[in-house]
Image (cartoon, rainbow, N blue to C red; front, top):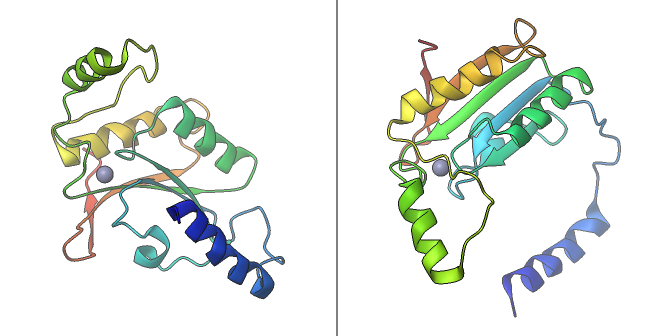
Length: 166
Ligand SMILES: [Zn+2]
């Protein structure tokens, strides 16, 4: 059985006991979290969030890509989020990633591709978080309207450490 078949089986047990139909599409705690997709980071557990509390946006590296911005703008302007957390983590797979090397390797193996335009590899965890915070804070539709704070999650301790804005 594939992993997807396995999770479908789990859903068959979940749906009959479903108890979340009362939830609003507006996040109850008016919070949006942009976090890395790392499988070790359980955002809801680590932050004490219940279903319905917050928007959780995830991608490799917690990067404020065009699509992450799309979600954050909607989260604030359409769905009421007032605070944004950006959460990277220790041992991130994107830390030290060489974009050009990976792109070249994949092109050799599988042929050229235009997308993704970048893998957003970075060299410094804290600086990356700062850059992502800046992208949100400087966007004209979000600037001055939302609180933006950045954090590094330690995959060995479960603790969050705040990254200063500058
Ligand atoms: Zn990561």
